[in-house]
Amino acid sequence: MNYLSKENAQDLNLIKETISKAGYKGEVRALVGGSKSFAFAVGDDVARFPKAEVVWQTMQRENKILSEILPCMGDKFKSKIHQISLVEGEYPFSVVKRFVGKICDNRDDEVNALKIQDLPQDKQENLAQTLAEFFAMMHKIDYTKLHIPPTNETIDNWDVTQKVDFDYAKARLALKKVSTFDLDDYHCDNKNEALALCHNDLSGSNMLINPKNEDILVGIIDFANAFVEPKYLDFFPLYKINRNLAVEVIKRYNKLVVDKIDIKQTDFTMLAYIGYNLAKLENPPPYFMKLLKLFY
Image (cartoon, rainbow, N blue to C red; front, side, top):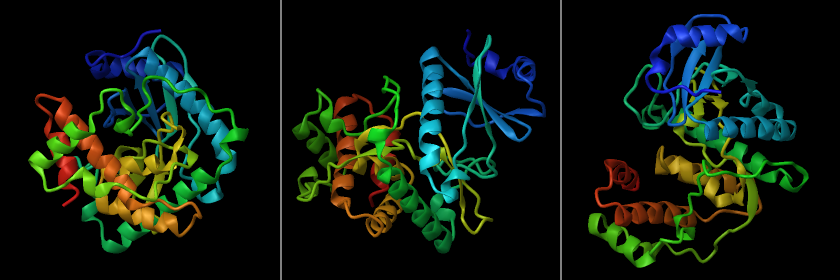
């Protein structure tokens, strides 16, 4: 097997030929891809080509996870989650049906993306409610009865306090140097460490939004990072979209479950993440300051 590089991913003839051999027909055009794959629209489908073998292994893992969890999801979410098809060959790729919607990860791309703050208030509330219901349903799944594949190095653990090089004092100082936030103020007395099967990567690039719909969340994708972890960490990726969205989702989630999440706990997780990276990196990219700005 070979994996697409940045150069041959621009060769649409190669992409068309590879996709056509697998029996998929239609106009082929490049889509906004992630850091791990190149994405192409093919008629009503989306083909994703992994950039490396470990990413292909992750796609295989996602396929197994979806086959396990889809029977556990209600009809509302079965229509928002799709099973993927895997195509092996010289250039392996996965195929899913294309959702008619846009991602919402704050990038300046009006064709493929939108910004949550630009949505009408009622649409923001609808999104928050649907996300809360999704998390509640995921977290109620009895993961002990499923066969969830083991994790690998591509799966993120957002709790930086578990890293061997995490230094609380340095992270706190780095944060205080650039903001008014003090990690000491975010210690939570009611920490919830309950385990659950988590999506673990429901950031803006993994949800598809269609503001024309009454229920605007039309698609939830990329379950490759899903695994069993403390459930409060499942809300972390929402902070990368907008802290207000994360807070609203948690508030609504707490009305649906017995095992509630303290917002202080998720705030601390994000602030520790920012402080850790500001302290660790000699020249931290603007990304971490953008995350911090979402707290104001």
